[in-house]
Length: 152
Image (cartoon, rainbow, N blue to C red; front, side):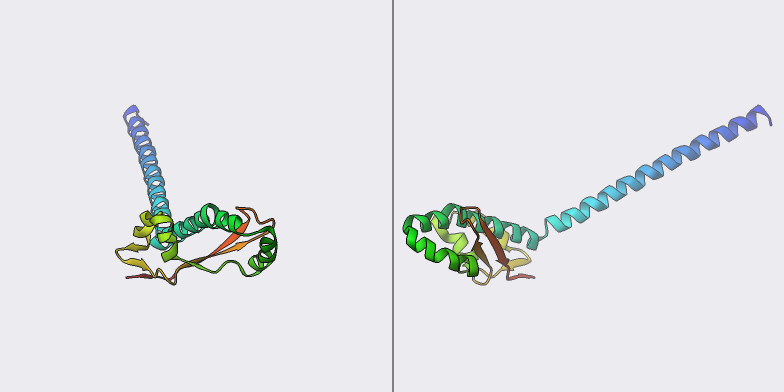
């Protein structure tokens, strides 16, 4: 084998290794882009965003408004009677309309989440149900969501 033949074989091996690296990097970048796209489609899906926002609004309503108002108004005796009922059946479902309007429309900024192009939620049938649990502090509860939304 001559020196010139050896040089050609060496250049060919190097170019083949470089091509493999480019292909590997290209495949890795493509895989990352597909992963990011799938994540964005799931995370920023209008229904997912509406569900997260409704849960947040329900938690704020109970922890920052309802619980304090109830504890101020109820005597110890009334609280003892009601807590068993609340733990079993939960509070009456709170409609989205009420969550958007209570306390001088403090949640009005979230209205666009439930009313956007191609997606809208019924403000009377979309609701949050809060079920207080023992020991009945501000953060001891479960939350159930009912979304009544349509994609247009």
